[in-house]
Length: 207
Image (cartoon, rainbow, N blue to C red):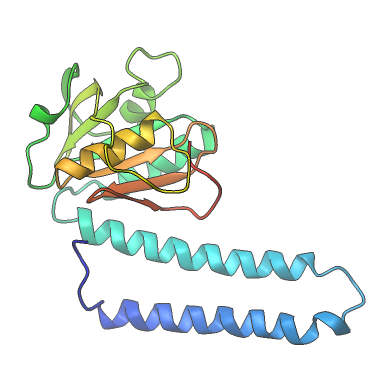
């Protein structure tokens, strides 16, 4: 996968430190579990919070690595994805990098509008005629919406994926685009790159 090279030392050190701290917490829980007379669910919750924090740091790093050279609006994209996730509004957003995308998708409505959180949220609002399709973004603009992305022909993972996730993987199989996808059922955010789906949030099955 693109980006598989030596990690920046600062990020690598941060990950090693965070994972070591998590291992210490789990080890402490293992050592003291039999000694505790009360429920240990709070301890599990603390471990879970630490893990989610580590996962968030890693996801943020990789999104910056793959997208910062291609758009100045990474924060808008990630914040909007979070809002859509919280509202359980499904979304499919392809960010152009080097490969042309418009010839690989179908039936989109040209917009050529400045990228903004309110516009993206409106596009994916349930009931909007465009909400089931994918959005194409180039640099700081929404090029089109309501696009049909090619479905994956090679996905053979264990998780059962819905239409949006297969479309995200499918476009990333034939272009270098990074495709952000939000599950309508679970709110889980993922991104597809190079034909592989990566979770931005830890959690259950995507759909």
